[in-house]
Image (cartoon, rainbow, N blue to C red; front, side):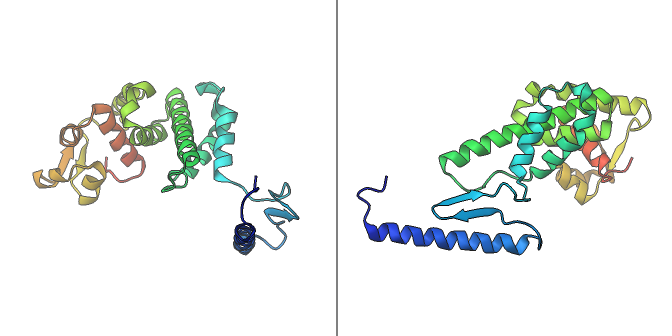
Length: 231
């Protein structure tokens, strides 16, 4: 409780709280529509988020997507894909980056794991439906965020198989060579290849980047999907 706290300290704390709430209300009001109810419900001795507020929170949407889809088999996710992709699209960085309080660290780690699980679900869905471009994009993102745990995700084998299937189907011709442009070499992390000629192969990318075959396939697949690599 506040027993033993000097009254001047309590008065100063209340002043800071009032100022902070006023600044928050002003900032939120500048972003709200004319008919939107306020986010904060301020009453004597109480502050709460208004139940009638129309604001949304990215963390809440990510948690809802995870809860909604966690028990759905990969082959039955079709009706939930839009929700999952919206959720992973909101994950653009760590929660409250730079804050070192214990609760921030715990929440940051928890949300990072949720993000990985959503990406894994989307990747599994694309594998089940043989959607190469989207699967490679999600799989590549998963490997970037969690490279040390790639074997647990079970992703390496199917990435390689997916690229081989694309070659077999004619979607990714055998012997495809990648143009030796500075932009592409930077994306792949193989700038040293720029001096070796006008193009380079997937094998050369793998050797220069010192990455497993599946990781190189994921990089190239994602770049293909984004139109950054010529076929």
